Length: 308
Image 1 (cartoon, rainbow, N blue to C red):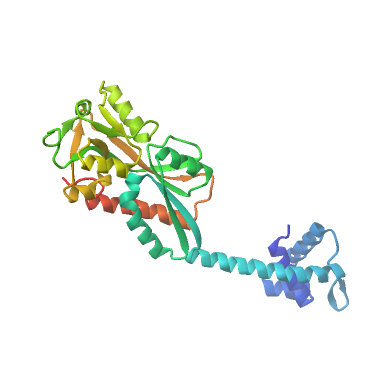
Image 2 (spheres, rainbow, N blue to C red; image 1 turned 90 degrees about the vertical axis):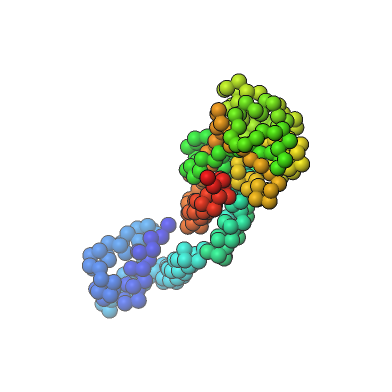
């Protein structure tokens, strides 16, 4: 492996034909210059130059290396310039993963702002359950993940960005006459519930919380897809438990009602995660900053959680 600095010094000596003139031009001492050239000769295992009465003369090996060294230094300079351009105007692709309940409110504004800042970077957004997102992140299939309640792992860099309160959702006409908010969690044992099946992360969380206080939900139907769940709720087929962000538009349209849950309340932690096994690029850092900013903005707008 060549040392670029040694190649630069060698080229200068070859062009000036003199150690002393090359040393002056490069602002280095002549002994330092001589040692570097000697070290270069030792690394390649052959003499590159010799002195005669008129100065420095390249050997055949030296002439060969001069040609290659010039090309190597030119390529290195070009690479440095192109890498600098990438820092100021990044290119490439990035993949973001998030659960459907997050994507329904976060994807549109985030993609728009990201594209404005990084028009040369292709962005792909995939949705999945938090367990799948964690697996994809560890395997390198996605670069950044927004997910719920991720376990602590050595190869995961995760930071909490939100405590997400879950609400009871029902049709606007409130078929079970629950009345005004809030409602006790025990009500889920008396009304038809529409929930995902295990091992869905939300179902695991609800089973854990309800089981700890002796509540057994009356599950009418198990549905994995959030849009289908909301359509069934809107049609009055039952109630469900989701974050407010997943239904804020339906609430605004007067199609769904929501109730705050108490005794106990239900929350989950929303995390922003990347892999510690891969380098954190400029684009990844920028995307994670945008996600934090968008989540804060959505909270202020009353989209992520209802305004008081």
